[in-house]
Length: 83
Image (cartoon, rainbow, N blue to C red):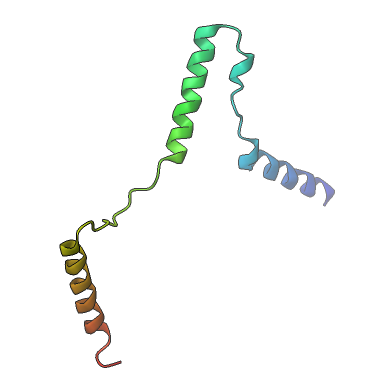
């Protein structure tokens, strides 16, 4: 039973995202390799920070607001009649 617990603990530690290796660019001595390392980190960070594609369009003019309000009113009337 003790062996099973050790194996389970090892699997949890190995599979955890916390143990993901972060490349330490500052310890690289060669300047071109260090700069390439920083560029890879920058691209990875930008990919993580990239906002999800939003399908929501922000209306800017009153005409667009009126169209959006009319569409919303029609959909609400079709859901609830006389509530």
